[in-house]
Length: 357
Image 1 (tube, rainbow, N blue to C red):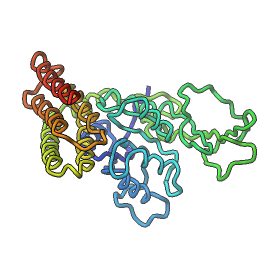
Image 2: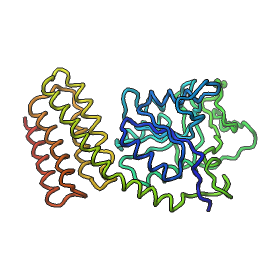
Image 3: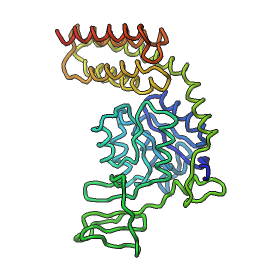
Image 4: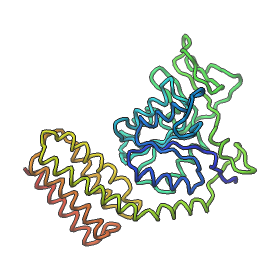
């Protein structure tokens, strides 16, 4: 079995968390991806993508093309959903068939289905691991899905289990209202009587990463030593993770103080706290801190409310922050035993007081 060679792959990595971008970049480089462009939100990513359109005078990154996009779902001001819509639908998109991996700590089926319905190829859930990253990349390389084009959807076939289709000609009508296109091109207009096009897309990623002596027809795999190096790289970032959590705690504490002083602007601070909580719920388990993931998710859920704060609510937010701080200060890994139970119990009591207000 051939070993993938990712040296020629160019990845556009989009996330408003600098820590997540750094984390993924270091993992991808360990897998031998040499060209990685980072964007802090969808708007910056779109500017980079526009620069790769044939005939563009220059590129702000010096990259001529992108082979893969990995983008977070929740970003401001332009989120992953808006970026994906632009890639799939906009006339300025350099490649509407671009492989797109949506990244999010929001693993609820509603979010996964929405990403799928917008045209995402894969959905990578935070906290991610080397195994989950390599599995998503392998699926893109080995099992790409052909595209479906209708009047209200354009993207990979949403059916995971596809039946083999035999192509006799370049374009062959199937059934009464489906036309199969074997050219990998999007039709300009819908023909009369055609409600959907099924587009066979060349497997460009497989052609790109086929290793020395390998071919697009042969199944491939990641080099075991590269996977081991990526795992070590991930583990080496634990101190960076701790620093990032400490910085996040400081931002949360400032936001709560400003929320208390300026309650009329509560939406501004709810949004800030919610975004930080979303990031905190993302990678705790990667570094052995599942309690931070649990606490971050709880804080995220509570700050989605639409009502002005009262003293009990501010107390509840502070209880979440104190709990996260305690987990990191005491370096409580896993469930934390008795100490972990005390921290969780204290927060649950704060929740009960808030609910009983």
